[in-house]
Length: 212
Image (tube, one colour):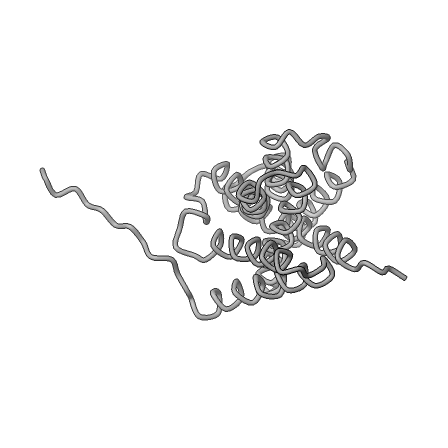
């Protein structure tokens, strides 16, 4: 029996998240009429891109998918499966929203842990978590020629920031990983789901040049 549940919990959520992210990314690629290779590439970039960008910025090698190439098969396979069953995917929208929210908070905590292991400053640890949680979606939207969700009004990056802050803050108060990880995951997940349910939004900056 595991005495430390946090690594097992995070790894399980990570696997669920990369599959879910790959499947939602495949749908985005399908809306852009991409071929099957494009669908697989978009799926892999979305699911694994945040962690890869984090590792390159921090000099943390090997990259996750290099150390675990089976993750490429998992995400690519999920993308192909999505293309095959696309007509029924809309019925599972709520499931994917939940999985996406779980992925966001799990990726964030994992990103923080990677920077912690490298003994980096607290600010860098927090930013590492946000990059891990959000960058994959940004890459997906850029490659699909859309304004990234991160830069729009939804509570997304802010949820990642709060999740990372709670994880680090609870540890600063002396809580163990067995306590700090579930606290951060639960609070971040609740915030994201409530934002989706009640349409909470970030303030927008709207500027129109009327000098002409």
